[in-house]
Image (cartoon, rainbow, N blue to C red):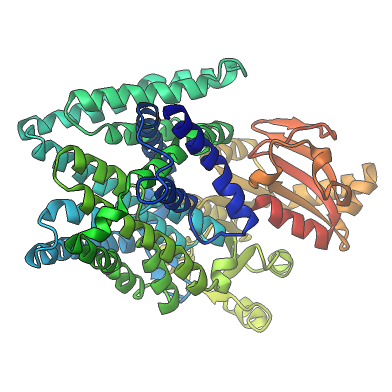
Length: 612
């Protein structure tokens, strides 16, 4: 029977996503579907899958890998003070600081969670206030990220704010769970030992920071050193966590954080994700459903009454998120964002697992919490997808600010693709402003070029900043200020190019645009390579540069792409090397492709390949 249970579990892990794809079920997370199928196959219904030692081992490993991958989901760039505490304009035109809004939103969630837990205790429904508070404030980070990626708003102010709220909703409850389990396990005096776990994580990060770069160079298909290192980190920190009295899931989560900070390649991330979500994690979710005993739940009136109350509490706990978001975003999207943060499953399951080990919750109560989380996980993405409306600001991939108004910048403003860029032009010359204000929709007049004025007015609230004054020194000063303010790309124009200045700007991460060099290069191209000149200046065809992020087109030969006959691929940049493309060239995630073709097709292909 043990072998049959394992076989059925692995078989279902294969079949469930296939059936969902065939039926076009996209609004329900796969994890929720796996739990539901586990309920049908387990003790609640058919009882075809039973509890076995093999399934228990693989399931325990699954939750550890799940927490590891959750740690790898955290984008530490979002926590950068320079980049993400500065104000960004939302779709409503308001100045938004994603970190500040998210912190206030989660603070409200924490308060609401405690109040709801106290209310449940007062009603005699559930007596453990601390445990209920931790569960109510959790957010399923993985589900949130997947939903935001689907909407392509991760880089927008509302996307960043929702994501930061979800990060807090995963990290903070996990830390609170560790404290809860230590205190309730009778080891409160050893609580300080948890510090040793974080010390171990820091030591491992420092120890493997340099060797990891070497690993990437010497790894082979038969060694896979990056994967071996990942599992070493997992078991090292899980072992330390258990030795100091912390929960092993905290150790696994920290292992994921360490791996993330080692800056693995996209290929490494894909391999680890494949191992986790391809095998171990589905077993954990299916077994979670198998272990649910809904017969006992429905036979217990008190526990059954707990179910609708828990569903309501999961939603009410995230009400402060909606109220906070409404001050920064339009009401419709604020409601959708608040609803999405109510999604909770990944931390709830390990939390209940810990509570069961501590005998802090009964099996029936645990089943009620899990079933409530499943219901919420089904409802939230559906409500978000049906409510959230992409605004013009949300649809823009990158925001460009051009400071300096002249014939060149006017041409750039008119030619930049509306679907990819939102362009704002700034000037401090009144006569230029009066001349072009009827032609440039997003034109703003500044009284001067003082850095404090620019910062206060949000001139550096952009993805790309371009300085094109006639004064080279002013361009350098403003460009450096923009870079210091955290702008991702800064471009400065220089009339006179000095070698030392070029080297210095390159070290500072600032890009140089030289008018004289450009004109000379174009003339040289016309003389030496007229075909290249025609490609650049052709209005019927486009020359594009795109980073391949769509996993549907990676790991495949170039000749296998269904649109390869519609474009011409000139070069491929992989890391620091340029590759001459061939039909047999296998495209890897992060490859930068330069190609040309009719602009409509080239535009469609650009959007397709860059989609995550």
